[in-house]
Length: 190
Image (cartoon, rainbow, N blue to C red; front, side, top):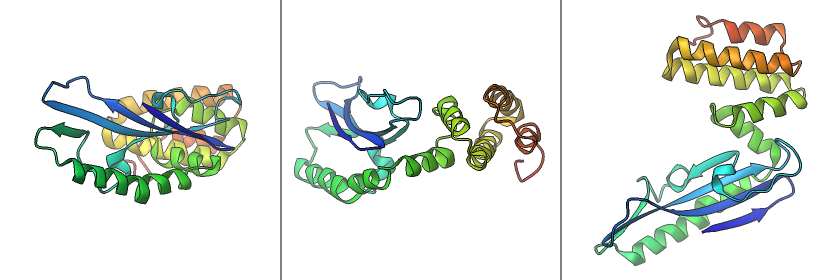
């Protein structure tokens, strides 16, 4: 089940997703939130499913009222308590979250700072079209730090080479950016 809101620069979705591992006496579902930037790729985008979103979060990533992955229902579930937690999460966190990310600028900043490799080609293409070398540099540095921390030098070098090719094809590869893409041992990346 999906609920949508269309803004001038973004589209937002709340998705209720049931788990595939449900049984007759134990049911799990997820509340997913997604944001799509209308012109990240082109002006003809329409958000139909949460998986199309440029920024995706589960309720436990937005609200302190949920810490577990998935909301579990069983014979022991206190439904009044659950209803209150969901209501508070929406009123206090999810509405604010969507308000904070209703503009393209806020969403691009979030993607640059926290999206990692998710939607990386679309984001790099967008930043190149906008000729925003500062944000390109920040994004590449953030991804590189994340990769070196979690994936090691070999995978990082492969992805940085892919970024370099994409930036070359867009005409956005500066000497400074090329140095960031190729240098693995400085700026605290180790």
